[in-house]
Image 1 (cartoon, rainbow, N blue to C red):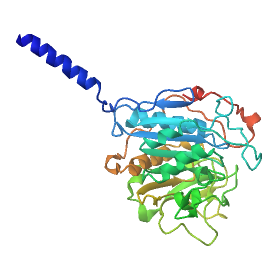
Image 2 (image 1 turned 45 degrees about the horizontal axis):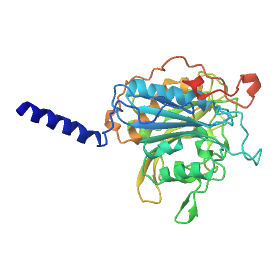
Image 3 (image 1 turned 30 degrees about the vertical axis):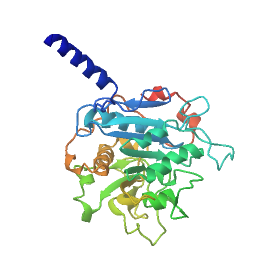
Image 4 (image 1 turned 90 degrees about the horizontal axis):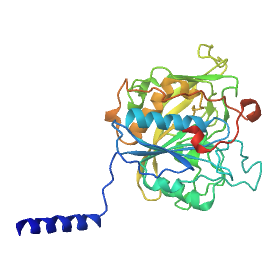
Length: 347
């Protein structure tokens, strides 16, 4: 009789638990696989259970190569679940050759999967002058009100056209208002100068700079504020960029061009009053990320953005996972062999 009672109790317990929601397993990726985006489950590491969404949506700097590379690095070496979303054409292909609305007023871009911003922990954004439909912009606006952190890379500071987010009834420029500076012009000579990163001495002990020893890349320095001006007061500069007279790491500094800030942190407060940590770096072409220093700076920024600065290690692994030989930047698509591909091509 006792054994029958025990069997009935076990059966009732199994039935009862079957109707209860299961807690998320930190090892399970929170986003379903899809041909429209890429998912990289997190391995062992401090980031276990955290989810990062990376958006690749530019036409010039090959973010379709760099964002999957960063996602794989963050997942394998640091434990973060990562999802990479892309701007897709009508054939659901990643297509950097798509025009922008300034060139064709009929253009509307498409980034499937933006609904996953609601449940992610960090957004890493690399977009350039994209025009999204209202329902997709709504996911971006909601994220800006969430209090969750944002990392903006290079063209993210002019990442949208017809961006209509408002705070207290005032339209907010994404670059100026959220990231702390918007592209004004090329300070370095476009496609001629490269950039040497110089640590801002007074902020050398900032956690994001831990272990960062060498930052160099082939992209030029952006100017994000008027000549004679400075970064907004709320921004804490971490790196300045010195233009070099050429695109090799040992080229001489361009003495006609002073260094300008290329990486900083700040806070952003949306309509809900919640405070989000923000990191912006104006370097970031796919070839720039061949620099271990830039990879370390960006990965450290992910930790800091999430309030995990205590987990930043000076010599944590920044090795690229798999092959990484991205094409050069620019709009010479034919010469650079830039053609549309399905998202799985970048897996």
